[in-house]
Image (cartoon, rainbow over all chains, first blue to last red):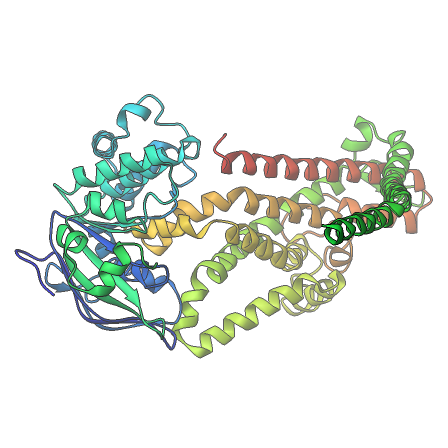
Length: 258
Length: 314
């Protein structure tokens, strides 16, 4: 399944195993740069597992195994140094997970880990990242306050700012708004659209309206009888939601199952 | 209509009967409740009272002995145990410092390996994973071994084989062995309490494993780790068996790592068993009790600060 133009992320014949269990089966996908790509599908179909392929977070789980290939800018991600890969491919998690440190320490954590020491450089980067995550105006006077004192929506935007601060190319978002209230959700969605100008965004979501509102392309995953996840259909979001080619996609987006 | 009516009335009669049955035992349940409350209340009171009597007795008996002179003059020995306890206080202090300096880095490092690194190692090889399993089991077991066993080991290895003699160094090494499993286990607990999401967040930013451990995990676990270290200070202060067979029992001020000495706890033992100065034993005991109270108070102070910090108040 291919789409027009350049390709930022790609998998070919990608299979993923937890021990003996195949969680993802033969996934082929090409993800465009500077777009929001949504991954939708019923619970347990391997959406998050698939997302975590691109920054190799799955490798933290013992006993997992991969077959097939995955690429970032045409280079195999399995050949790249995992630390550098994760700098280039950032991630925002389902539950906001700021460190129990100050707001400033959270934003500058990544750049410092990569060796940036100059205080004024860090200050500028912190401001730029917090502005880009639409959080600056709310926290600029209390950067030394604990990040844990922020609201859930603010924490999630802080996590986005933290990811932006290491100047990634791709941002993976694993149901970034599922733990947030509707207002905070809307802010995150606006932010995704904004960020897509500069970054490639891949977002896993349970919420089909969210996928329809926010994404340029949508990938629909399902799982078979054997609980193996696979990619059913992938294309421009408009087509997926108005004129799906696959009956199963139509059934899912019209709410007949899942 | 009739049948239905009859049906409902017999139904409601049945309801009333069963409701009566359900309320019947209400009085009995209240009685059991009061009895149970009485029993656990009494148990709580007796337990607290027993401890208060022990501590209070030692403090009251000892208080008359404790004054500035008692604290600052060395014991002069003899059957009447003239003098104070200053050298035993310093002996305890030196020993605590030595044990912590030896055991804390080792124990914290070992716990970090077991919790943060061993999991990945287990994916690596069967031998390593087996070794890690044995290490875990060993730590569990050592934490429950009677302390005199550590004393015997210390005597055999440090005092005799390595020819360190009865000395601060021998006692420090044996004491370090004693508290090592305590520090490893409390550090393990503290690390396990750090949410996985912190580690994921750090790794996902491209931090290395060590940057993640030192930058996020250990700082988040630090109050718990420090609590474990303070607890093991208490362990060294209260220990007698290990130091009985390694420290030598000299009442002189230890001048080097190879000097013998005695701790406050040992001093209490010597005074009680080998002199007639039972009151002085009580006095030293009172100082020990106060020291223990200070150590425990600092533990609960620390752990309360942790909670505050985790909630983002601090």
